[in-house]
Length: 209
Image 1 (cartoon, rainbow, N blue to C red):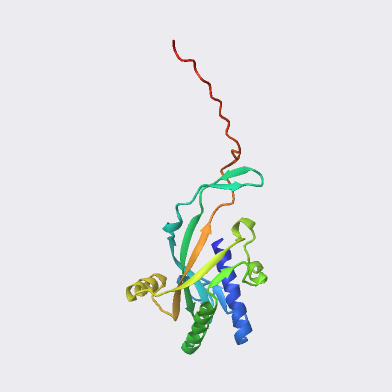
Image 2 (image 1 turned 180 degrees about the vertical axis):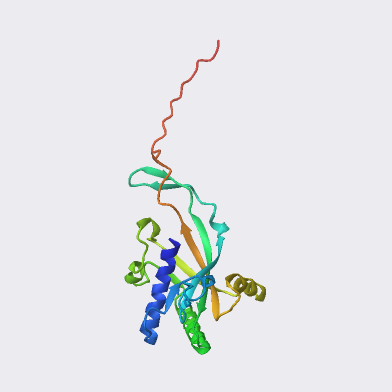
C-alpha cells in the first residue's frame, strides 16, 4: 500500500511538471539514494531526477484507541478486526541533477507543487495517477485514501545523520511528513449477528412462610 500511495504522488507531480513547465516525463521517481547512481556497472539509480524516498516512519499514537468492531446495520452483522495502524512517513525529496542550478530549479518546482497541493484523495487526483504503475496485487493497492504533506524542517544534526546514512554526499533536498496513512489487512477475524432484542424472563418466588 505504501508503494502505491507514493506512486500516486509521483504520478501527480510528474503530471504537474508536464502541464505547467512542458517537462518531458518522467522527471520524478521513487528511489533509494543509498544505492548510488548508475554507471560503471554498479547498478544504482539515474541522475537528473527528483527522487522521493522514505527515510523514517512513526506511529500516530493519538489514533490508537479506536473500536475493534465494525457494524453493518443493513445486514445486521458486526465484523471484528484489529484496528488499523496509523503511520506518518517522512519523505525525502531530492534533486540529483548534475548541474546545481537545475537541481535548485527542480526542487523549487517540487516545493511549489506541494504548497499548491498538499492533500491527496481519490477524489482530487487524476484517475490515471491511481492506475499507472500500480502494484499488480489488489491487496497492495489503496482504495480510499487521504495523504497530507506537511513540510518538515530537520535540525542540522538530523541532516548530518540523514546524509551520513545515505552515503555522505548531500544534494538539494526537502523533507515532508506524509500523514496519516492507515495500513490494514483486508480480512476480518470474525463476524456475528447484531443483538437486536433483549428478552427478560422474571420469575417471582413465593415468600417463605
